[in-house]
Image (tube, rainbow, N blue to C red; front, top):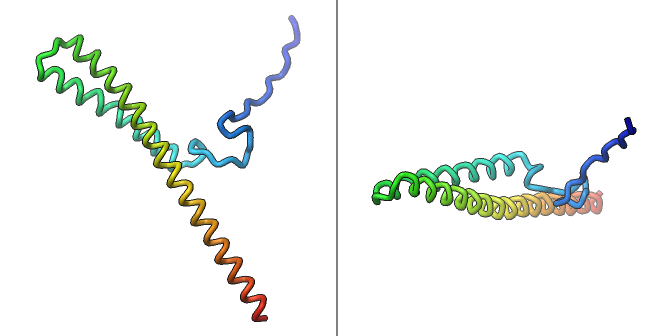
Length: 115
């Protein structure tokens, strides 16, 4: 048998391979929240569409097909909205950390001048 080359570790394409990159997938609260919203969006889209279609007298097969399409669509919409919201929340967190560090640096500078 031919010797196989060892596999190289895959780089995170979204982060450009930077180990210090801040991503939604690496943020524990963001990752769980996005997954939760995706699931909720898909399930609610499916259930609501199926219920409304059956109440409207649509045949069961067609109602199920519509519900699947609506579930997939709302799953993707919920995902996009959750990612957009978490991007803004993570930026706000970073700004708050930056502001606190600037304030701390200014306090240390004032304390150094006073001493």
